[in-house]
Length: 478
Image 1 (cartoon, helix red, strand yellow):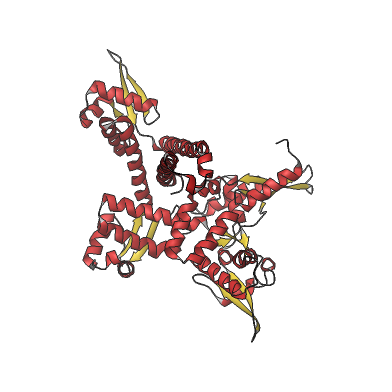
Image 2 (cartoon, rainbow, N blue to C red):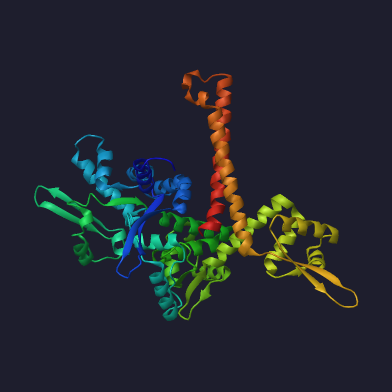
């Protein structure tokens, strides 16, 4: 970097504060068995960097569910990355000694934590076992359990080691001073909890004297859960109908607390009565009868159990949404005939010969060959040549959609498109920098038209970026 060590340290501290970098310690074995060297290393958390462009979406979710004070505190966490309760109280007081501000900030933070919008920060420097030990544990785990699997990448291993245990992740312990009792301890566990957990963790050294030294940050995972659920519901609403969307939304709301990761394959199993109770809570579901709900669950393709419990395959819904997204790209870029050919190959999920594609898709053979080669050149199709030997040697071209290579290619194109949109926004703002710095009263006549034009262009570009981000999440996060 050709900069001083102190500058590097300050840069790393800022990046860690903004959750863009995670530190971890690694033990390097020496020549002898007793000799080892431990060093601190740093890695970029790329997902958290990408999540920064989603901050407006996060704020929109919080503003829909909680009050204005919660939104303001949440925006402070987005701005500063990590904050202690003490720093939050300082921001709320704005230099004024106001005891109610302290209690109000504690209450506001508790609301955000109870909604799972805020969580405790991970371990600042988790220890990563040497690769030999990790591989040995992975082999043992794989031998005795087919379900549990050790994270493969270094990033996954570090983040798993740094994550706080679930009992502590959303634990709030605040010590408030009162005139009658002297000191009162408030302990809260969102969801199911017990007082003994509070007693066991109350002595945690990280809490300080009043719980004000614990670092808090935005819980991105909760928002990704919600965005994934919304994507599934909207896809079902478009493919099927509103009743199926209401039934799916009820299943997702009921089973949300049971999901341990964003990419959950199934929701449920849930009994018909449990689903119906959740359906009746929403305005759209109050007119739905039990028979209508059963029909909607069948339409969704839910797996039914012996006790009339239902389980939905979320992975299949996401895959259908991904297929539709790529098919729409092919339609806009290559036309209707290319769309029919691509959709045929995508649904078949196997190699098909050129003549067969032409006859099935009702496209001229010469035009079919041109379209297939164009899609293959742009890496949307996989091609194999088969030579049949005999009295006369014949060559056949077979085509298929290879999703394992196509999906990363589509995602890469989306990243480039997002970069281009960001660069265009920056260019437009830089070009009209002088206009933006003018006072409002001086923006008249032609200057006002230029300002309105800039505002329209920026709104169009940023809304396009938000829609593109929905597609990026579909392929990268869901």
